[in-house]
Length: 150
Image (cartoon, rainbow, N blue to C red):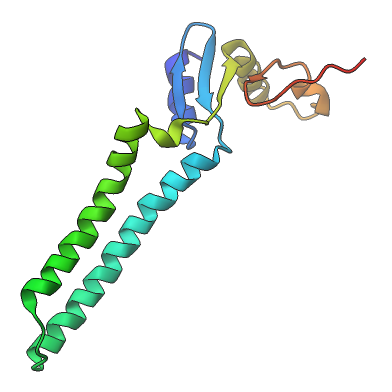
């Protein structure tokens, strides 16, 4: 299978592909906790927006029913809250450079030959494949600290 197809399949399965060359595909460690925090922040933003919408609806209903609220103060507070939430990630990235959430995420180098071996085994639908099929593959994970014991 060609490199473009392999990269597309990896991206479609949710793996962050950092790049590829003629011999290897470079992927981000799927267990990177910082990337999980970034995903959490994206979902938290959606939830905060929904909660704010409900609060605005309640505020509008209370205004219709005759509550004496200061409109300018409420809108100012709402604007400050959303501006702060919107600016946190760009400001932090500006201070520490590039993409803070990607710092610390290790890169895994996977050989295209090994990937093609796995794909060939899958396509051949090996019914009697033993557990040793994956033992011969050399996948280098930069996050693993290898200790040599003799």
